[in-house]
Length: 333
Image: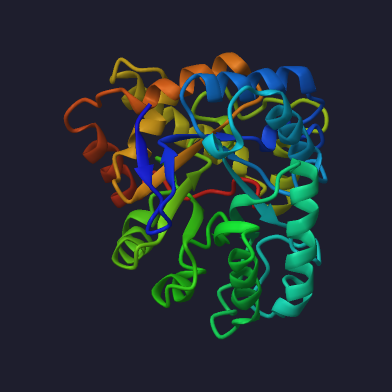
């Protein structure tokens, strides 16, 4: 496993991070906690040192699951980098610009949520704390930053940042430019390539680390989807997109049919090629590969060691330039 610096934080993250939203047991359908714990073990024992979670994942259940893992693993706490997220007080993710930050991230809320996460995780500090998510209209606000800075000074947080909405790639660029954040988490994949142009250069200039998520675009790049498929009961992919983008499934399938042959030509698995595309951008500190399956987690880790064929990255990038692929809804959280 290779490692990269997270901006100017002093933290070094494994190129492949362990995404845990799928372990929540609510919006992904029923999950087996024992299997999820084995998936965490497979990731850490396979060389990853970075676990990403959020207070909103199963209403804190995944944080508790990670707390159990931390208590039972032989690894020292300092060897594992834990990232979690403060859910918005209003419960609304990806807020529109007319919404007031006071309904989402008041300083008292940020502190209370941080301390609640620490209790569930069973740790004295969290390595990275994100606000989950953000609005582009909050560029003039600073109270959130002052509170996160206090938590950092107290040793409860080592670094902090903003997890921006799926398609709001520039929503926190003001904060990046003003160096008010240590890191940004964003969607970056063969479908959503806007970060290459509107975020990564600015982040690199200001020493802000980038953590990429949703590299498989909700699973379509690594699973067999069809326009008429049915997701398991309780799975958000069969529910939320109907309200956000009614043609989401068909659109995802059509783009995947265009991209998968290019991924296959690499001689790698689709997951490894998709992850490799993201890691081809040196501004990315780590990419989160989410799964509750130990075998899938182990496979994903190999993407850190693969060599991509010549012209693969440029071919994928040209699809974006030609508007044959585009950013798409990945669940907002």
